[in-house]
Image (cartoon, rainbow over all chains, first blue to last red; front, top):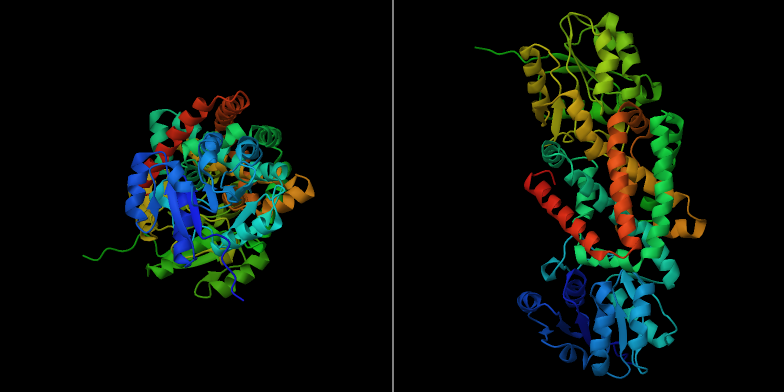
Length: 294
Length: 294
């Protein structure tokens, strides 16, 4: 019995690291799908036409989405509402819409009201990325062995199953989750680490000039990892913090309390308190290696 | 004219990541030196006897240092004072003593008063390391293209030159620096990043159990780098914070102010302030890549 693939034509809106990696991965893995892709920046469209000559780069949102059975919104979370409003009139009846944004409560709030009744919105978030951005940053193996979280959000099982097949075929491990929980887990695993990395690199930038130059020269241990994280796309991350503000502020409050505790231990030379924490955190690393996420 | 090598026999006190890496690098690069090594932990000595069968692992400090022209203290900075007191009576006249500690004002304060008049103490700090510790963690290329900071501290030029030759021959780039400046630069490039990584991993450890499990599973982006840093040797790092407390507290104060500024910007949804900082920090990454320290 022949089984048809869940989607034959897919639209990618936003031709950046994530959008192009989806297109590269599908080609690399010979998935039976065709793509159209749109970006609102003409320079990005021109760059994409060179890099992705096997797919259709469109000059309007309508051309990108009108034939698509799956529409992937791979844009910063701050513009999700504008994009869904602009594409809604042209969506093919019965299509599935997903997104790749790092915050999920805000995306559901911003996108769901504009989704046509015949279509289904299944929010998603690939836990994959690099500090690079733009169409030239994408690569075919980005999602391999990485989690891709999706939020079924009441959509029919067969639609969720179809999306799961496609994302798994890109190499990802698909898991379902709800929006509140997603936003809290990501606040501590991703958003707060990025905020802190941005902060400490900023603190270093503001040091007197001599010191700053040597900070760059002698960045080998510790600081260098922070500068890599703090070189991630500014627009994407601004939108993340504005749109997951509640969960980030909660985690930030906990972090600040914990940091004050250590600050006091250093000031009062309470070595035992430092040693206790440093031993507990070492054990967590072992758990992550055991979980195969190293 | 034959030129003799600056040192023919070297003692390494403390057989951990740094100590064994020095011994491995010297062998790998065929340096004309022999080694004796001592550790106060008998289990470490037994492990080292297996791993480093070409050198002499001694059971007393006296045996380790009595024939050495160069003595390298590769122990946590909190025990430097005890080690120098214990070895002082047995040091060979004219020897050079160096260390590999991450704080330099404290080491000078703790070691210098006990150095015999005929010997010279030239503090040092290799900006190299991993999150692993112990004799099995050492490897021959650890110091390649990494800075090794030394503090001449009034020692004769020929002694400083001899140490520089040996450290360069291990693959390092040797630079001189004074103690105050060293401790400030390292506070921001290494000590504060480690403190923050320990803190955020600790914050995650203390979350409710379900969330904590998923923090480990979904640690892919951002958090994972912090757990690597936060798995570094607890004793070594406790001692760093207790011994560079002034500079760390100064940098921590600056960091906390900057973090409060961003916290407020998130709460009041001031996206421009976030975007401005995130763009500035991205530029710093480029400087580090240009400096070849990536």
